[in-house]
Image (tube, rainbow, N blue to C red):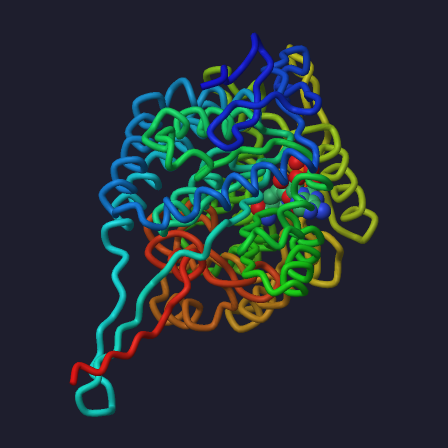
Amino acid sequence: MTPSHTGDTFHNFIGGDWVPGASTLPNINPSDTRDVIGHYAQADAAQAEAAIAAARAAFPAWRQSTPQQRFDILDAVGNEILARKDELGRLLSREEGKTLPEGIGETVRAGMIFKFFAGEALRLGGEALPSVRPGVGVEVLRQPLGVVGLITPWNFPIAIPAWKIAPALACGNCVVHKPAELVPASSWALAEILSRTALQDKAFRGVFNLVIGPGSKVGHALVHSPQVDALSFTGSVPTGRRIIADCAARGAKVQAEMGGKNPLVVLDDADLAVAVNAAVQSGYFSTGQRCTASSRIIVTEGIHDRFVAAVVDKLRSLTIDHALKPGTDIGPVVDERQLAQNLKYVALAQREGGTLAWGGEAVQRETPGFYQLPALITGTDASMTINREEVFGPVASVLRVKDYEAALAAANDTEFGLSAGICTTSLKHATHFKLHAQAGMVMVNLPTAGVDYHVPFGGRKGSSYGPREQGSHAREFYTTVKTAYTFAG
Ligand code: NDP
């Protein structure tokens, strides 16, 4: 096999070979912009097409692979990720800016996802039913789609690639993965692990391909190629909506996970410590850069002032610093553009009538990076931009409401519907909220972010399109069914 990297220049993986990019881009540590993690390949459209062709050529062999072969590959990848969790977690934190415990936690999750889908390869059964006609049997067979394009964002550099690559391969599809240019190192490390499995066997070369490069070229090629049967995307709303429309126009299967404006309801009867922990964990940890972050905190009147005071106390006590420094609670924002976006939304919220109760401004640390104090904005109402658009940073707003009914109405007053939470000791309100919150995931006395890896993930309304990701439900996207009728005579 060709070398995977030349010094600190890292290549793409196409058709079972490591291929230098048409150019390279430095991968910069957001905690210390002097720290260059490496120079990563920038593919052009021709390399994207080569990867798609390699995947297409490998499909006949891979679709015939046995569940045991798929299990062995995915399980080995999961085991290696888990064995190297500290090193890979550190790399992830270095390139994305989440703290080291968060980076290691995400890496462990990626390892467990590969092991889960190793098992799924063995469990991918269909159904057998008697026909309504005498002597006829009916089988519902699950079959792979062919070549799937996977486009991933920067905020979960290893977990999101894992939760797309693993089910795609488990179901017998060939893969072309395009990670976000901002965080290529974790995807590259994952590809390097995959390249040393049985996927290097002659018949399976091309089953998995990594093509690092801009969305406008590589992503565009995946979305528009007639050789790509299905596309799974996670990222922003505008990009997601365009990809959905483009895939639909050419009849390709598409799945998109996009933004959130997730509500966390805090009722008068909530346990204050539980509510503060839920708000701070899901609003600000991972620097608020999670699509499940609770960015709208909806609080009833009786607890409002105590709750706001306790959240501000907690935010004041947090350490915002270099992601790899022991004791850091919140790392930097991912890049300059995202930091500018966060600051713009904080200023706009104040111009529209909100009060900045704490934080919000950019700050300096020992190392040059994109640091920002977590922002809490109070006195907001549903019409303000801060409560309508996804910020994607450590910024949360508070809406004060009269009672549970008003809180539920405010929670659902959004074009998004990914995750929704409620903090209450009332079984009646918790049960009602679980049934009536317009979201794909509902949390009671828990942060809106932080989900298990073996159950469905996804939202409603403008947050998601297509079948759910993760857990056994992932097969709904990565397979198609065929109904077979047999007359036995
Ligand atoms: P994008 O949606 O632009 O990027 C997500 C992925 O799509 C990246 O791999 C990107 O490639 C790729 N992409 C971009 N344009 C195209 C295209 N035309 N065709 C195919 N693929 C494309 O998000 P950004 O990273 O630019 O972030 C912008 C905003 O999106 C953030 O500020 C945040 O608000 C939101 N966001 C939401 C996420 C979520 O999980 N809900 C995750 C990430 C961002 P590349 O970047 O390499 O060019």
